[in-house]
Amino acid sequence: MIGQLLVGLLTATAALTATPVLATAQPEPDLSGVERWIDDHMAAAMAEEEIPGAAVTAIAGGEQILNKGYGLADVEKGIPVDPDRSRFLVGSQAKLFTAQAALQLVHEGELDLDTDVNEYLRTFQIADTFPGQPITLRHLLTYTAGFDEDHMVGWLTHQEPLAEGLAKYQPARVRPPGSGVVYDNYGIALAGYLVEIASGMPYADYVEQHVFRPLGMNDSDARCGGQGDTVAYLGDGTPTEANCGYLIPSGTGPAATPADMGRYMLAQLNHDPRLGPGIAAEMQRQQHTEHPALRGVGYIFEHIQHNGHPLLFKGGEMPGMNSYMLFVPELDLGINVVSNGDGRSGEGIDGIKLVEELVDEFLPELAPPPRTRIRADVEQYTGWYQAGRTSRFSMYKVKALWRAPAHVTANGDGSIRTTGLSGGPKDWDQVGPGVFAERGGWRMIAFPEPGQLAVDGSTNVFDRISIGGHPQLHLAMFGFGTATGLLAVAGFPLLAAIHRARRRPAHPRGARIARVIGWITGAAAVVFAVGFGSLMLDEPAATTAVVEGTPTLIALLLLASATVPLAVLMVFGTLGAWSRRWWRLTGRIAYTALTLGALSFAAAALLYNFVGPPFH
Image 1 (cartoon, helix red, strand yellow):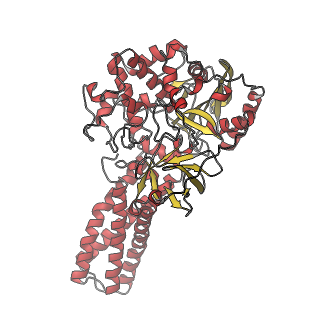
Image 2 (image 1 turned 180 degrees about the vertical axis):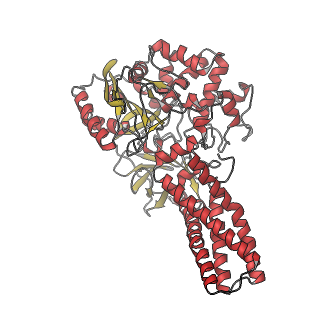
C-alpha cells in the first residue's frame, strides 16, 4: 500500500549507484524553526485523522534535534506518549534490522549474497520453480525473489516457530528471481531464518546482541514483544491486540521507543561502524533497479524523491500502528514519525507527506531538467497493467477489486497517457527507448521488458493484463451473480405464495428441490456480497480481518465456497427444467438466467481464491 504512493523521478547515474546516498557532503542546513513547524503539522494532522497519539524523532548534523510525543499512548488510562518510554510496533521497519543482521554475517563469511538459499536450509527447501534460477540472499534483501503475495487468511495468528512457519506456508514462486521488484514479507522472513542458521542463535537474540545493544537501543524488542504501554487503535477508534504470527523478521511484533529508533537513524546517518563495517553504506546504496533511468532499492531502503530532491524511505504498518522513516540527504536530516492509530486514511500520520512539505519549506524549488523528446511508436506499451504485488493464489487477490489497474494509452504524438499511477491522468514524453518522463514534472516510468511497467522509486512493478483479467469484469461477474441471487431470494417465496393462493397443483418434487437450491444459492451470494462489500469499504479493517482470520470473514468465505457446488446443482436443475418441462417457458428462461448468475458468481469466487477450506 505504501509503496504505490512512492512514485517519483530518478536521473540515475553511475555515480549515484556507486555512492551511498547519505554519504554526500552537504553544507550545514538552516533548520531553525523546524520544531515549531513539525508541532504545527502534527497538531493539524492528528486532528484531521483523529489519531490518539504520535511521536516524531529527528536527527540532523550528527545529533538528535527533536524527540517529542503528542497525544495519548493509552486513551482509556490517559497515559501520554513519552518518546523515551512508549513503545510502538515498528512493523516493516524491522526489515532494516534483518538486513543489517544478514549483512553482518555476510561480512563474517557465514553467508553469501549470491549463493542459492537452499544450500543453507536444513529442514525444508524452496521450490525449484525456475530451474537454474535459484533465489539468493541478494534477491531476498531487494524484494526480487519472486514469491507470490504472502498474505493469507489468519497469518497473524500462526504462532509456529520461524522455520516451521516458513516451511508450512511457503508461497508460490510466480516470477524468476531478479525479474521484478515486488514488496515481499515472506522473503525477508526467510532472510531472518538464514540469520538464525548462520549465527546458531534465535533471530531475536541475534538482533538484540548485534543490532540493538551496540547502539544502546535498550527499550527495543525483536520478539513478539507487543507495544508495552502503547495501545493500537483501528480507524474507528477501537483498540486492537498486537498479534505477531511467525514472520517476525519481516516486522510482525518487534517494538521500539521513538528514542531508540532515533538512535538507529543516527547510526545510519553517520555510517556508524557499530552497524557493521560499511553496512550502512551498503544498505543505503542502490542495489537494484528495474531500469538504469529509474530509482530503485538498496537493501530494504527505498530510493524515492520529491520534486527532484532525493529521499530514502522505509515504512512500517501493523493494525493500529504506522511508522515512517525518511532521510533527506540535502538537509542531512532523518525523521521518524510513528502513530498509534490508523486514523481516517488507514495509514496513521502520513510521514511522507510531512517530509514532502518540510522539503518544500526548507529547500528551494527545483525545475525539472530539460529532456530530449523521442518520437517513436508507443503502441507496444499500451494496455492495462496490474500491480505485481497482486496475489495470484491467495484470497488477498481481492485487493485488485478496490484498486483499479493502471491504463496506458497512446496520444498519437509519440507520447503516452496513464491513469491509475498515483493520481489522475498524466502525459509522459518518451526520452529514451521505453523510458518516459512526466510532462512538466520529475517522475519517470519505464517498460524494461515486454508486458512490464516499472515506476521510479516504487517497490512494485506492474504486469500487463488482458481484458479478461480486468478487475472491473470480475466485479461485474460478482454483481450479476448478486443481482440474480437477490431476484431468487425475493422471487421464489413470492411465486410460491402466488402458487398456493391460486391453489394450483404442486410442481414435481425435482422442480421444488431446484427452486430451494436456487433460493439457497441466491441467499449465499447476497449475504456474502453485502457482508464482504461492507468489510471492503474500510480497507484497514478489511486488512485486519484477513490477517487475523476473524470469524466473520471465515463465515463469509464459507458462504462464497458454498456457491460453487450449489451453482453446479443449479445446472442440473436447469437441465431438468428444460428436459421435463417443469415450468412454463418464462419460468424455465428465468431459472436459466439465475443459474448463469450463480455460475458467474461462483467463477469469480474461484478466481479470487475465496473457495476453501483451507483458506489462503
